[in-house]
Image (cartoon, rainbow, N blue to C red):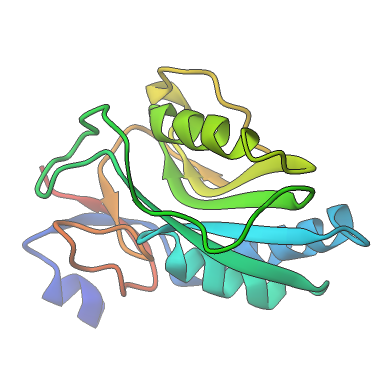
Length: 182
């Protein structure tokens, strides 16, 4: 048992994605994005807070010029293990996106409701394109159809935390993704 597992034994059922394969997949996504967006005015929009570690590692792997911005939304109440369905904008973008190639960087997609709301909101601002890159994708939880262009890992419907994903606002610092004890 690693030091992390010992420390987290109260919360962690098992490690779902170890740090090494996680970083390898982020590197692959960075290479793909560099090729797909070559010569384009790329703007990465990170969905706070969970997307920060993914964004940070991903942008280091992207070898073309790009900019970043942040959008904070909430559809979960503190302590909740499922979305409440109502999306609130907590922090809007700092810069206009008109004419930009926007890539939304998200930690996890489950129901799709939050990203559906975000993409509709951003489309009203007339970007050149909007695509979505998510670290984790819970396809079986989808309530609304949302096109996901880049996926790190498809996962089953389990409550996960680590690598940006929180468990009651804690454990975002973990270098792996774990399944929470229920």
